[in-house]
Length: 217
Image (cartoon, rainbow, N blue to C red):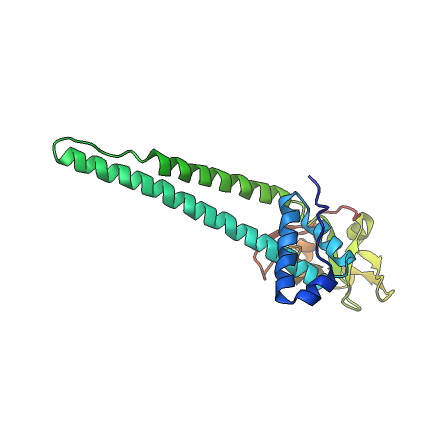
């Protein structure tokens, strides 16, 4: 599915104020629902004039809201299923205790609850698959000027690159490596083992990260 859904420009956001922010998040959520990769959506926002920090925050907010919707759907499904079961058990026990009689088997609420739970599970799995390669590029902070730089395969393996912002030659082996968490955009200092494997747990958002040594496009 394509993520090429029109997104409001930075000018529209500025003109609309808070309403513009809401409409921008809604547009991003539409792109996510259509299979758009978060990084691609973020880059398209930047291309349309939104600054990188705002674009990243907007995408993260859209993902957070979608996570909350799935959580609410699970809770609602559990309530309908549990309520249907409880009603069926209570009426059955009442009928049994009185020596027989009619009781209710609440199939409708129970089936509705199961459907909600199944749909929530499918959405959660789809979101997990969609975000699986969110950390597809190694992004590091230049130790000289603190600019964020995306490294290609050779630069990541060697730890050496020329910063495009300050033109300084960098060797990450000379000091602690600082990378950007692909989830919350925080700058994280890696120890030698984390730097070697590209695997760490972000101390800010507690997400597990696996930086993959793949060239950026």
